[in-house]
Length: 147
Image (cartoon, rainbow, N blue to C red; front, side, top):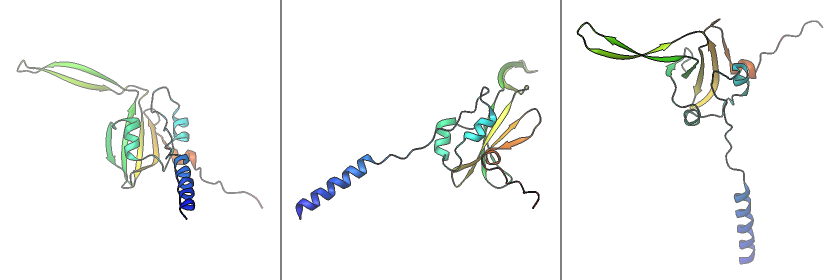
């Protein structure tokens, strides 16, 4: 009986130790050099938690509540911060950091539901048209024509 128990424990230990640890895919970076369409196609939806998103992308530029009630984290790329000096009428000097929103600014919004990224919304400054990862990864079926 003891021998069977030892063999069973050894087999169980082997199975546990060779099991693959939890794998979390690496989401693509939000950068001025990345192709937005590729980012949206490659972003792993339904897997990345808020903690993993924060660890990978850092803190968002802005947190917001979206129209559908979901939480959104906005990451903006392609802008420049400029530190300017202003003299007030009182003579006091103030330093202000201004954001230059020139052409080329784009934003990626992570949409969270139950603490997991369920969609990524891309918007640029040009056309103002937004595209989502859900649209690219799960396109709507087109109706068949004809008999």
